[in-house]
Amino acid sequence: MSDITISERQAGDVSILDLEGKVTIGEGSVALRNAIRRMLGEGKNKILLNLAGVGYIDSSGIGELVSSFTAVNKEGGSLKLLKLTQKIQDLLAITKLLTVFDVYDSEEDALASFN
Image (tube, rainbow, N blue to C red; front, side):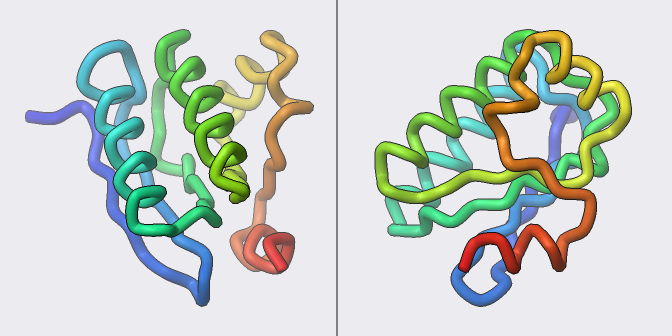
């Protein structure tokens, strides 16, 4: 059984990835990396990660968020985060990464920010 489930949906030209489970070293972070790389390969470079269903993320998962962010930026796109749990928000604050990412609580606001 996989630690993480990633489902993709489109909202106009924005691709939304709904993450459920854990983004941790090994399977979770690899699954996220593969999903992002595949989307970039398909020319999708406006990506919104919905983390509402992510109960736990470790340093490797955080690292993967950062490297995904960098990969998407290199392709001239943008990667934004949606619905961080308090735990993840605290973790990003401690690691000073909260300022790196565009973070939204509302999907509507997040989608509007891409245009």
